[in-house]
Length: 130
Length: 364
Image: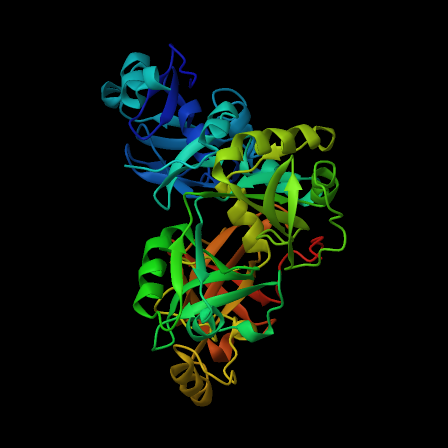
């Protein structure tokens, strides 16, 4: 059964978001890392880049397949997790902790309404059957 | 309705992540693709390959028949010898690739699971003389025990000496008390065996192999690692690297395509013409320079010219870099050729390399 943290927000594309003032820390969910498995390379773009909610701005390469990373909120990327360059497997091991990916300075707090809460995300992935 | 192999319960007990493959529910992975890959390269792992098709050809004309429908030379096969081979259409396109076994009472053809029905129909359509074709996929279970420790594990529970069995040879033996065909074959580049047994004994044989292998950290291996292992060896995968639009010569399978075979074979005349004209493209192995990972269908460029496409690609767990196979125009197929792989709009540098990519395999 995939881990879902109560205090986080989620997207339908399996990113999680931790809101801290106007800063959103973003990663992919436990469910997403399980599905991808063996993450070997992440490309997160660069600091200073402006992203729009729903845009693909990064890629996650697993042994088996590649998938896009979508921006859960609009804003400016103010930090990327440099540890993932050398240890992309942190995303598999600690998706909500050391496997975080980017921090975005939120430009429109109204967009947070579009995110799922833990219960909504749990329904999305049908966790009861996992 | 998806089918299940006789080892389905074992996969669930081992927490395999099950996916649809070739009409079967098969394990994609257990502990993880990289860990499973490394286990086979260093110790031993067990693959359920019962989803593959097993077709027996009986009758006194079976040698002439199989020689006619396969590209390799069946006349060269001694009793209990196996050979890799290809079925071709009359135009030289590939129906399937397979392993042919010469057994005492029949010839056994082991084909890709996804092509099992197509192949059986194709064999029946081309049948001649005193030949009977029986699809035995359901009755026979198939396991691959692969890795440098495979022989040590199996020897503990086998009633014949395994060491004299050479690569691509087979024997009849009792393994865990069950009579079966055992061959030194595989799809990994490591030493190892494939076992063909009565499906009714699948569960007890599986248990005995895992019991014999526990000192060697034996574990089940899923389809994910099967793909990375075969790709490091440049073994072709039907549906990716070969299909009806490709021919064995451009796929680098000339070594099993005996154009000078006296009796010829289906597709022989077309392939002779293709060879005479010269190949327009070739399947090459390439390594990425940098972090990028190639995937099937990515386009291959030389500067601004599109010269081909990727058929298989992955991160190589052994080499720790992106590797791939692809068809490129013959002019760009030499080892050392610099190429670019178009990875979602960006051209990433790559170089054609000598294959297999992984050269330390224990295959005998």
